[in-house]
Length: 321
Image (tube, rainbow, N blue to C red; front, side, top):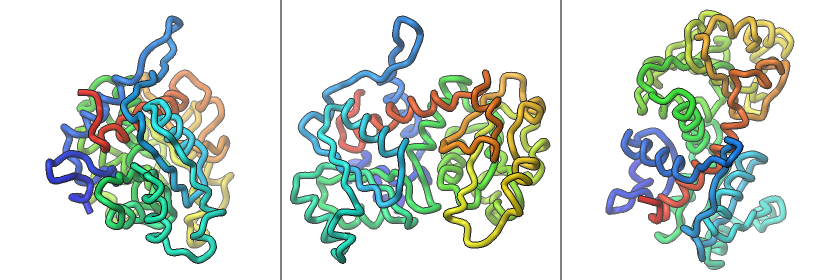
């Protein structure tokens, strides 16, 4: 699976996951993404439009509901000057019994150059990459509980912008890590980028077995888990992926694992608070923290456009040098 992402020349062909990618490539993606970001006169960040994918067609194939991810991919493709098609899966021939591969081949015949794929099944993007023609590129926008690689990179870009260097950082990822593709991709990315320590914090029922093999230290006590950390990444409870009742109630969860201003006092004084969204205020994080001075959640959303531009451009071999 890891080798499928590269062509014979060793360049990106598809972007399917973080696992197995080398540090120079991740740093290059962050560099290209940052090159798309510029500042306005009032100090706000914006993402400029460039003609790198003019004449190309990007199709968003979202077999799972999404707002931020689909919208930022659409904006990113348009900022690259590509034509964008948002494929309505519910109204497609796949809902009438047509196989996924037949659907893909029909879309290829419509001169698609790239499929951005989000699917409930782990490995779906890899499956599609194996069945498309060589000129078609695949970007994984989230597959089951496996990976969400562009989310991990936009998180990494945000951390880089705020903190500068990765090496000295201690990062705590808090919440439903068991079902989180964001957590998996972010743990992979932060280890590759060389952070000092990654902590996985949550109830024992929501921590994967052998989380240490992924490169994170498990904590079941929130205050201990965030003590002296530089970055806290909060995750929502993914009840749609839970097979059984792993938690007694959302109220009790917030009492034990909700990030409040009082809990944040245990972290480093200049701690950065992040969340991939959607946010459930009062469940995993207090509103005062979401809207507080340590939060960079909206900056993450903006960085999603730049990172997805970089990934799409580099996968098609036309990124800025």
